[in-house]
Length: 233
Image 1: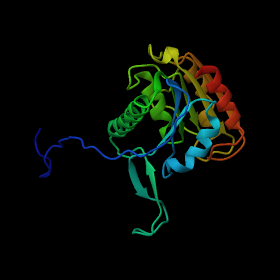
Image 2 (image 1 turned 45 degrees about the vertical axis):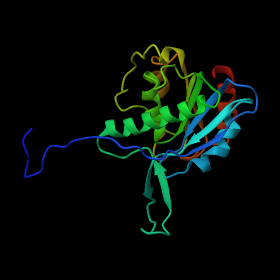
Image 3 (image 1 turned 135 degrees about the vertical axis):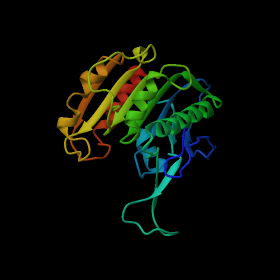
Image 4 (image 1 turned 45 degrees about the horizontal axis):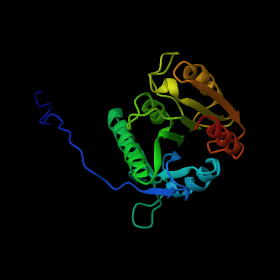
Protein backbone atom coordinates (compact mmCIF):
# COMPACT_ATOMS: atom_id res chain seq x y z
CA UNK A 1 0.00 0.00 0.00
CA UNK A 2 1.15 3.55 -0.76
CA UNK A 3 1.51 6.34 1.75
CA UNK A 4 -1.34 8.82 2.02
CA UNK A 5 -0.44 12.41 2.85
CA UNK A 6 2.92 11.26 4.14
CA UNK A 7 1.44 8.72 6.60
CA UNK A 8 2.66 5.15 6.11
CA UNK A 9 0.25 2.19 6.07
CA UNK A 10 -0.73 0.90 9.48
CA UNK A 11 1.12 -2.08 10.97
CA UNK A 12 -0.39 -4.08 13.84
CA UNK A 13 1.18 -6.20 16.55
CA UNK A 14 0.08 -7.02 20.09
CA UNK A 15 1.27 -6.71 23.68
CA UNK A 16 0.43 -8.37 26.98
CA UNK A 17 -1.23 -6.32 29.71
CA UNK A 18 -2.18 -7.29 33.28
CA UNK A 19 -5.66 -8.74 33.73
CA UNK A 20 -7.25 -8.18 37.14
CA UNK A 21 -9.58 -10.89 38.47
CA UNK A 22 -11.76 -10.92 41.58
CA UNK A 23 -12.38 -14.62 42.29
CA UNK A 24 -14.32 -16.66 44.80
CA UNK A 25 -13.73 -20.36 44.27
CA UNK A 26 -15.57 -23.08 46.21
CA UNK A 27 -13.87 -25.25 48.80
CA UNK A 28 -15.60 -28.38 47.47
CA UNK A 29 -13.53 -30.78 45.37
CA UNK A 30 -13.25 -29.79 41.69
CA UNK A 31 -14.45 -29.62 39.04
CA UNK A 32 -17.04 -26.95 39.70
CA UNK A 33 -19.24 -24.76 37.46
CA UNK A 34 -17.93 -21.28 36.75
CA UNK A 35 -19.64 -17.91 36.36
CA UNK A 36 -17.55 -15.21 34.70
CA UNK A 37 -18.84 -11.65 35.10
CA UNK A 38 -17.88 -8.63 32.99
CA UNK A 39 -18.72 -5.08 34.10
CA UNK A 40 -19.87 -2.13 32.02
CA UNK A 41 -17.96 0.86 30.66
CA UNK A 42 -16.25 3.00 33.28
CA UNK A 43 -16.90 0.51 36.07
CA UNK A 44 -14.79 -1.79 38.24
CA UNK A 45 -14.91 -5.55 38.69
CA UNK A 46 -14.93 -5.08 42.46
CA UNK A 47 -18.29 -3.26 42.29
CA UNK A 48 -19.82 -6.01 40.14
CA UNK A 49 -18.58 -8.87 42.31
CA UNK A 50 -21.10 -8.60 45.19
CA UNK A 51 -24.03 -8.77 42.75
CA UNK A 52 -22.36 -11.54 40.79
CA UNK A 53 -21.90 -13.60 43.96
CA UNK A 54 -25.61 -13.28 44.74
CA UNK A 55 -26.52 -14.54 41.26
CA UNK A 56 -24.26 -17.59 41.32
CA UNK A 57 -25.83 -20.87 42.52
CA UNK A 58 -24.38 -22.67 45.52
CA UNK A 59 -21.10 -24.43 44.84
CA UNK A 60 -20.14 -22.34 41.81
CA UNK A 61 -16.89 -20.53 41.23
CA UNK A 62 -17.33 -16.81 40.64
CA UNK A 63 -14.82 -14.58 38.86
CA UNK A 64 -15.37 -10.89 38.12
CA UNK A 65 -13.06 -9.80 35.32
CA UNK A 66 -11.86 -6.21 35.07
CA UNK A 67 -11.65 -4.63 31.65
CA UNK A 68 -7.96 -4.30 30.71
CA UNK A 69 -8.35 -0.76 29.36
CA UNK A 70 -8.88 2.31 31.53
CA UNK A 71 -10.07 5.89 31.16
CA UNK A 72 -10.82 8.95 33.24
CA UNK A 73 -14.55 9.17 33.86
CA UNK A 74 -16.50 12.00 32.23
CA UNK A 75 -16.41 15.20 34.26
CA UNK A 76 -13.40 14.11 36.31
CA UNK A 77 -10.16 16.05 36.52
CA UNK A 78 -7.28 14.62 34.55
CA UNK A 79 -4.52 13.71 36.95
CA UNK A 80 -3.77 11.62 40.03
CA UNK A 81 -7.01 12.58 41.81
CA UNK A 82 -9.32 11.92 38.86
CA UNK A 83 -11.66 8.92 39.10
CA UNK A 84 -10.97 6.19 36.61
CA UNK A 85 -12.99 3.31 35.28
CA UNK A 86 -12.27 0.30 33.12
CA UNK A 87 -13.70 -0.98 29.87
CA UNK A 88 -13.38 -3.46 27.00
CA UNK A 89 -12.19 -1.14 24.26
CA UNK A 90 -13.57 1.85 22.35
CA UNK A 91 -11.44 1.64 19.22
CA UNK A 92 -13.20 2.53 15.95
CA UNK A 93 -11.68 -0.73 14.69
CA UNK A 94 -14.29 -3.08 16.14
CA UNK A 95 -12.11 -6.11 15.55
CA UNK A 96 -9.56 -4.68 18.01
CA UNK A 97 -12.20 -4.38 20.76
CA UNK A 98 -13.43 -7.90 20.06
CA UNK A 99 -9.87 -9.24 20.22
CA UNK A 100 -9.27 -7.57 23.61
CA UNK A 101 -12.51 -9.01 24.98
CA UNK A 102 -11.82 -12.50 23.60
CA UNK A 103 -8.30 -12.58 25.02
CA UNK A 104 -9.52 -11.43 28.44
CA UNK A 105 -12.25 -14.07 28.63
CA UNK A 106 -9.91 -16.79 27.38
CA UNK A 107 -7.30 -15.94 30.02
CA UNK A 108 -9.90 -15.77 32.81
CA UNK A 109 -11.23 -19.19 31.83
CA UNK A 110 -7.73 -20.67 31.66
CA UNK A 111 -6.86 -19.21 35.09
CA UNK A 112 -10.05 -20.66 36.57
CA UNK A 113 -9.70 -24.09 34.96
CA UNK A 114 -6.17 -24.35 36.34
CA UNK A 115 -7.75 -23.95 39.79
CA UNK A 116 -10.51 -26.50 39.38
CA UNK A 117 -13.25 -24.97 37.22
CA UNK A 118 -14.96 -27.30 34.75
CA UNK A 119 -14.24 -26.04 31.20
CA UNK A 120 -17.46 -27.71 30.05
CA UNK A 121 -19.59 -25.73 32.56
CA UNK A 122 -18.66 -22.10 32.03
CA UNK A 123 -21.35 -19.40 31.96
CA UNK A 124 -20.81 -15.79 30.95
CA UNK A 125 -22.56 -12.71 32.35
CA UNK A 126 -22.18 -9.13 31.19
CA UNK A 127 -23.59 -5.74 32.06
CA UNK A 128 -23.97 -3.08 29.35
CA UNK A 129 -20.87 -2.74 27.13
CA UNK A 130 -19.69 -6.39 27.02
CA UNK A 131 -23.13 -7.88 26.28
CA UNK A 132 -22.81 -7.77 22.51
CA UNK A 133 -19.21 -8.99 22.77
CA UNK A 134 -20.38 -11.93 24.89
CA UNK A 135 -23.04 -12.95 22.39
CA UNK A 136 -20.58 -12.84 19.52
CA UNK A 137 -18.01 -14.77 21.55
CA UNK A 138 -20.56 -17.51 22.24
CA UNK A 139 -20.61 -18.31 18.52
CA UNK A 140 -16.99 -19.49 18.78
CA UNK A 141 -15.92 -19.80 22.43
CA UNK A 142 -12.21 -19.24 23.04
CA UNK A 143 -11.81 -22.41 25.13
CA UNK A 144 -13.33 -24.69 22.49
CA UNK A 145 -16.41 -25.64 24.57
CA UNK A 146 -19.90 -24.14 24.37
CA UNK A 147 -20.86 -21.77 27.14
CA UNK A 148 -23.65 -23.31 29.18
CA UNK A 149 -25.40 -19.98 29.56
CA UNK A 150 -24.98 -16.36 28.50
CA UNK A 151 -26.65 -13.66 30.60
CA UNK A 152 -26.86 -10.08 29.34
CA UNK A 153 -28.03 -7.24 31.58
CA UNK A 154 -28.99 -3.84 30.14
CA UNK A 155 -26.95 -4.29 26.98
CA UNK A 156 -27.26 -4.81 23.26
CA UNK A 157 -26.80 -7.41 20.56
CA UNK A 158 -24.12 -7.55 17.87
CA UNK A 159 -24.86 -4.82 15.35
CA UNK A 160 -25.13 -7.24 12.46
CA UNK A 161 -27.93 -9.21 14.14
CA UNK A 162 -30.73 -7.23 12.53
CA UNK A 163 -32.76 -10.27 11.45
CA UNK A 164 -33.30 -13.78 12.88
CA UNK A 165 -30.48 -16.01 11.72
CA UNK A 166 -28.68 -19.25 12.45
CA UNK A 167 -26.28 -19.73 15.30
CA UNK A 168 -23.39 -22.18 15.41
CA UNK A 169 -22.83 -25.65 16.79
CA UNK A 170 -21.61 -23.94 19.96
CA UNK A 171 -24.67 -21.74 20.49
CA UNK A 172 -27.00 -24.65 19.76
CA UNK A 173 -25.93 -25.87 23.22
CA UNK A 174 -26.09 -22.46 24.95
CA UNK A 175 -29.08 -20.84 26.65
CA UNK A 176 -29.41 -17.05 26.67
CA UNK A 177 -31.13 -14.74 29.15
CA UNK A 178 -31.42 -11.04 28.35
CA UNK A 179 -32.67 -8.59 30.97
CA UNK A 180 -33.68 -5.06 29.99
CA UNK A 181 -35.22 -2.28 32.03
CA UNK A 182 -38.18 -0.05 31.22
CA UNK A 183 -36.38 3.28 31.69
CA UNK A 184 -32.93 2.56 30.22
CA UNK A 185 -31.70 5.69 28.44
CA UNK A 186 -29.27 3.68 26.30
CA UNK A 187 -31.53 0.74 25.45
CA UNK A 188 -35.13 2.01 25.29
CA UNK A 189 -38.00 -0.43 24.95
CA UNK A 190 -38.41 0.10 21.21
CA UNK A 191 -34.77 -0.80 20.66
CA UNK A 192 -34.87 -4.01 22.70
CA UNK A 193 -38.31 -5.17 21.50
CA UNK A 194 -36.95 -7.59 18.85
CA UNK A 195 -34.20 -9.05 21.02
CA UNK A 196 -35.94 -12.29 22.01
CA UNK A 197 -36.75 -13.18 18.41
CA UNK A 198 -33.20 -12.39 17.30
CA UNK A 199 -31.73 -14.54 20.08
CA UNK A 200 -34.17 -17.45 19.77
CA UNK A 201 -32.92 -18.55 16.35
CA UNK A 202 -29.28 -18.46 17.40
CA UNK A 203 -29.35 -20.18 20.80
CA UNK A 204 -30.71 -23.40 22.26
CA UNK A 205 -33.16 -21.29 24.25
CA UNK A 206 -33.67 -17.57 24.78
CA UNK A 207 -35.60 -15.42 27.26
CA UNK A 208 -35.97 -11.68 27.33
CA UNK A 209 -37.38 -10.02 30.44
CA UNK A 210 -38.23 -6.39 31.12
CA UNK A 211 -37.68 -5.17 34.69
CA UNK A 212 -38.33 -1.80 36.27
CA UNK A 213 -35.47 0.66 36.44
CA UNK A 214 -32.86 2.60 34.52
CA UNK A 215 -29.44 1.66 33.20
CA UNK A 216 -28.37 -0.49 36.14
CA UNK A 217 -28.68 -4.09 37.27
CA UNK A 218 -32.19 -4.35 38.73
CA UNK A 219 -32.38 -6.09 42.09
CA UNK A 220 -35.40 -8.04 40.81
CA UNK A 221 -33.16 -9.71 38.24
CA UNK A 222 -30.86 -11.30 40.82
CA UNK A 223 -33.13 -14.26 41.71
CA UNK A 224 -34.13 -14.60 38.05
CA UNK A 225 -30.50 -14.96 36.96
CA UNK A 226 -29.74 -17.38 39.79
CA UNK A 227 -32.69 -19.62 38.89
CA UNK A 228 -31.73 -19.45 35.20
CA UNK A 229 -28.17 -20.57 35.97
CA UNK A 230 -29.43 -23.34 38.23
CA UNK A 231 -31.56 -24.62 35.33
CA UNK A 232 -29.10 -24.14 32.47
CA UNK A 233 -25.62 -23.79 33.94
